Length: 337
Image (cartoon, rainbow, N blue to C red):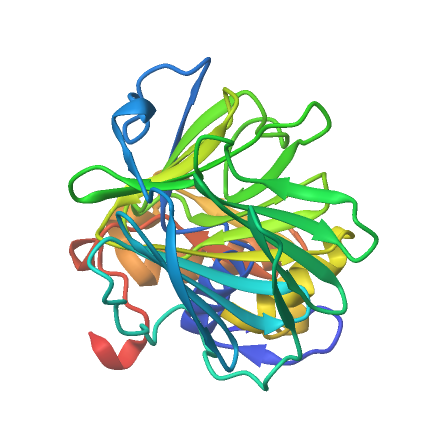
């Protein structure tokens, strides 16, 4: 058993291990891999951005209760207003949008948000209380402004959304002031400007296809496939295999507000128990006092924990187990042996 040093509550070993995994997942720090490539070198997805077919020019539109559908020459674009500062933007060349998935996004139904739609000649103006979106007709592209008319973010002037076979891309203008933070676990500097990153799930790291820009916005690239975020050039871009581009645009400008709105879309992490914030012992394949926990399995691990607490007198709250399978005699619960 593992006890809480402060509260004295008992927690079985398997609860310690599972809580560690839950904590790391809640912080975006376990179970996946991100490969970062600098200076625009090989990384997949956006090596030849000019070969993408962009959506073209505006043809017609249909206003809906929560947004607008724009038919363009090469694709359909749907702009949905979920909150006064949260937009969902989708592009599909077929004109038929994919069904909403139930695994990542926890909410698709939102109360109707008042907005206005005006034809300004070369562009449409879509306004909420907090944002103005200019939808330019030719080439079709989006520009985001705050309610005072300050630019937040712009699509590439040559067009922001496109596709190439079974691959989609969104290209955004890179400003001198914009720096990027997010994308889950990484082992490098926090500022992503100047990097090219492939979010690829493995057993070691957790990428999250969400980033925040210091110009005051966040983008959640809603997809499950390996995603490439290229911040090495102007325009910067994010791309992935798939038949549909689907992303959320969140206006802050404060990062705290962006994160709060983002977690309304994907869910808020529950607060872990108190002992989960304590001291952890990370084990791999050490032999201590003649014991090798990897060879002796769960019994060896429990013996090591007893030694740490009773012999060495370390204030240990949990152990991270580096185990790759049941051959090592580790189980999530004694009942599963």
